[in-house]
Length: 183
Image (cartoon, rainbow, N blue to C red):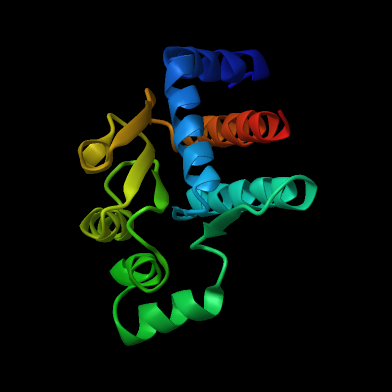
């Protein structure tokens, strides 16, 4: 595969996402933060790295402007390994949500396939608490798209493309929120 082919492979699914989808997700994040609510985010593998990156990007807003709580459920390996060992890996995110979240909080769930059992369990727990949910997915959306309040599906079957576009979406959300907070 050439570099130009790879760039072209990224363009089509990126352009298929409507800007309003990203803006609406960003509005939900901003609204939650204005209400002093927490924003939780989780994913597996590269999606987990995206969750940590988003939380880090949002923490810059905390230092620069206001008190914002964005928590990556991927960041505490002691909790993740404890839950995986003593309960089940499927509960690594849902247990944290059950212990930390409130009904007015927001969950951003990331699954390239849309079918990761621990992500679906996290969303089910969040919904049971009355939380608002955003899902970033690909590969047709999977089960995640129908479970969340607001899905954004990347139209690709390539995990590399999906995860990269998820990075772009999350960065766009954090930049948009930072600009609105600064106004």
